[in-house]
Every structure is written in structure tokens, then in C-alpha cells.
Length: 111
Length: 121
Image (tube, rainbow over all chains, first blue to last red; front, side, top):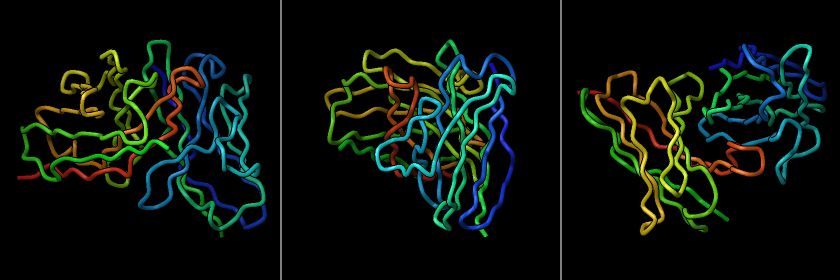
């Protein structure tokens, strides 16, 4: 199986842009779709990106996703940061045998 | 709109069995989705436990497979999780979720609010 590695924490100021990476340890990042989930304190995860770059209904276009073959990683970019974006973010993918894998999570601080 | 609601004992004794149920409302559990369980230990990240298809086909996290059983009850529109031989390491918030099959496989688009299970004597 593979691992998804995320930075433990990132911080940025309101109005700025932040990017969170998610690096796949083995296999190709493009082999299986990557999803991103937001989890606010005390709440359940909710999806902000699916299928690498698609946004669920209701998610603003400030949220965008991409994958990079050279770095074997996926990225979540949040532009025009708002204090309400402060949360933990998790990437998620799966392997050929349908085993689901989550990244370790990244704490985003908007200060 | 589909809603998921976890239920079950909040306290389980060490070496005992943890049993949780996820009730599905606003939709049918027989729909073509994976029905999943995910847990989060205190202060830690998300850990996928396993998933079950309406047919009864299951996939488990290899690290938990020997202790985990998932089942579906179509008559009650719910699915269940059982974890045997629990220890303090199984103390966590347990979430049930719905996973897509066709659009971005395993994209979990609906989540329950989660239920806290503590393993303690």
C-alpha cells in the first residue's frame, strides 16, 4: 500500500493564497483520483474537492485542486483566504484493491 | 437529501466488542454506493476502517481486517460496524460515510456527525 504525506501545518493571512501538498509515497498520483476534505473543530469532514479538481456543489471557486506528475503529489489551493477557512484539511485516495488512504492532515491557520 | 446517523454504546470495556450502526435516511442503502466507516483518534487524523457495498461485498483496512466486520441490513436501511478485542487504541470518534462508486470512486460525499467511543474499564 502507499502513504499520502501532508505538511503538518500551514499559515497565511486573510486575503492571501495558500497551497497544501499531498505526496504519494509509491505508485503514480495520477493513477487514482484524489479528494480533499475540510474538517472544522468539532465537526465531521466535508469534501471541498473530488476527482482531483472538481468542486462539490456549494464550494466556492476559491478552492481549487490539481495534481503534479513530476512531484507525484496533489495540491489544494485556497485563494482569498477567509478566517472561516481555518480548519484541518485531509487528502484521500485509494489503490487498485479499493483500499482507501487518507493523508495525515494539515492544520490551516488564517491569521 | 441523504443523511447518516451513527449510534451505539459510548463506552466499551477492554477486550470487548465495539458495535455501531449507521442509519441511512433520505435515500436507500441499496443504491450503488460504498457505505464506509472512518475513525479519528483524539487529536489525530482520519483512519479508514472499511466499506461495504449493498451486495455485501466488503473491503477492509489491512491493519484492522482481523478484528473488523461490516454488515448491511436492507430491511432497516442501515449498516453496521463491529470491532472485536478492543483496546484503548480503539478510542475514537467513529464516522459513517457514503462513498461514490462511479464518480471518483471512494469520494465520500455524505458523512454522519460522528459518535465517540471510549474503551475503558
